[in-house]
Length: 297
Image (cartoon, rainbow, N blue to C red; front, side, top):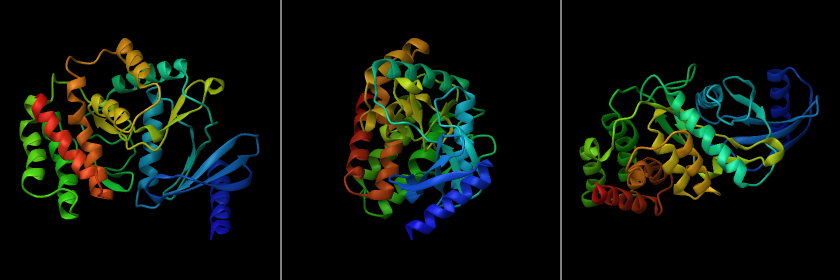
């Protein structure tokens, strides 16, 4: 019932923002099956209203957006949130120009550098049991990145992918298990926990254009992690102006030697999430990334 949904979204926006709204319209998109509605605010601005479809998904997203924004990340402002509804400022449509890409690289570097208490730390006020898209993502803290990455970001999704038939037990699963056992050697120089967006694929980068300053990052799965994971995810599905983003990032905060060789290692996490959720060719891509990481290590 689209009309009932848009009316409910408008009522939630008025309640959470304390402002009158008008012209509610359904929008395409939304992660994890969430429904989106665009509304016009009484002051002339626009907002997007999102209804969460999973337990604690909205509190996790709202806490993540606020935590990233505190560090200077270009995220849409959270205008209101409760357990079910999230209201954020709407992002005007634009394109990825050189200046906007470079600004994103610099701000992403500063966001990562703001850090986190530990690997796996959730945002303040955010639940430990959160989500990445439609997949549950457990935020459990660890001090050692290789052990934490294997236990909480690779093996849980590998098990699910094997159970659904996306990855074959034996040689295919064994390649990923070997990566986990060899992570202390593959991980590169130790790094402190970074403040990650956590689901930084290109679809979660909205280019607002020069009139609005830069990009906006949406739908985070924010947590403390390794900064190379965010950058590897940007590369995984292609991102406009990626070279400019990375160059500006490096100028702000240089990456450790060998970071480009470690891209497949960090892409294993989102690939396994996709293999667990969607099957298809993602399992094969995950196995290929594992074998590349082993060969480069």
